[in-house]
Length: 345
Length: 261
Image 1 (tube, rainbow over the protein chains, first blue to last red):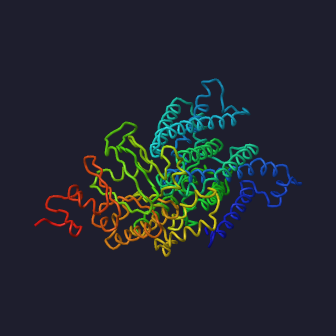
Image 2 (image 1 turned 60 degrees about the vertical axis):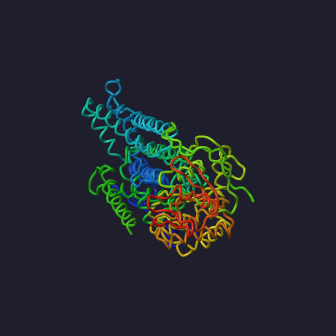
Image 3 (image 1 turned 180 degrees about the vertical axis):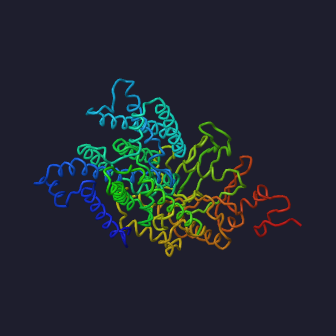
């Protein structure tokens, strides 16, 4: 009934697009490596060591991270927009990414007081500590949100509290910034700009496996989420335990956002924009289609942004947030204007 | 005949937070038999919606018992309740892509695997609900783009697809033009007589309620609760007592409100 028309074709095209962009991400960069050498590096064949290091240790983890974080953010954005029945809901509204920022700010900006300097060259665990701090920070906020939502039935109140927690935490980060050294400040600001290139190969694999597992779990919910489109009262009247559903969906989105933010820094707009693109592209609100659609589209757009960010002819790449915001903001505007037009008719 | 709903000493109230704010109606006791069409009448603010929401367990009751098909609402799960009563509410559904057919289909999800597809039985129940509500031609349209009357029919189709003995509707005919209103009332009457559905609905429109309903519940401003058939309530002068307003009075001869001369 639902997979008729152009839907299968769109899925096929998207899957192909994701594969293509993934390979392009391995091939394209400041150092020119031929397709043949990329393939040899991946399969462990005979090629220059430098090629293999660049492909396996830099470009591959970056591509895997972009792919899985894109999917994670798209998925969590869809969950939150349906849960809050709000087109502007997204990963940033629950204060979870602010929690991650606070964790990172705490270890980076106060490092010199505490006697360890994360920016010290050669500190092997520096990266690991930042990831751990971000995870702890975001999980702490997630726990608060879950605690609040288990006590307060009104989901809008939960949304407002999430936004307020975000403000409060950002203020605390501001205070930390005020008292920190310029080098530490720069490191923190860089983290805040977001990047898919902070992960090692093993980190990127752990990240993608965890996100993959959560995606599989999320495929238990499409029908309940479809019912939720009618609002909480209707959902309840159709036998849905709304409180339990809200909690499950909050926990899954929270963990997805925490993981993504911990490994890449806060990535703007993807979580907000991807569900809108998916709805408009597939012309549906049916979660049986939207769940796989946001996963593929999230991966697609994240890989595309990563490719755009690698400026041709330069050694360095643009901060990923600059690219995602420039692409994401117009999309959200377009989707919301379109939505309001539909309502008027 | 089978009792679909039994209300025993129910007291409804407005609640703000967990503290009791204002008692609306005290000690309501009545019952509903299968196939009846019941209209809840009352002026604005008398608590018609609150009564419906309380019966559905969406709002706490101050005291008393509510039984669906012999099961106390306090002792059955949300899922069991969803097999006994379906609803048409005034809640706004404004998703920009949800089609009428998808909306009706949501009624069938909890009958199967929540992640699975609908089976043929579900699909034929959906088709039948669309046929009974004469909305087959609307099924591919986006729900939020339909007219108010069409929306109401689709929402009733959804309730039919849930396949419950009892359907509760909150103001199903408000904001609809007169022909549409009559159409909805005729349809509900048909569902009660031909499909043996029990219908409990609130309405502002006393005259059309008198044309179609079997039983009336009248809610007064000061916590009164009266019930009876059309003949009973007219004989007791209840319509005049609760709804006469200044010069405009109820004429029991033709069941209409008229200006007194």
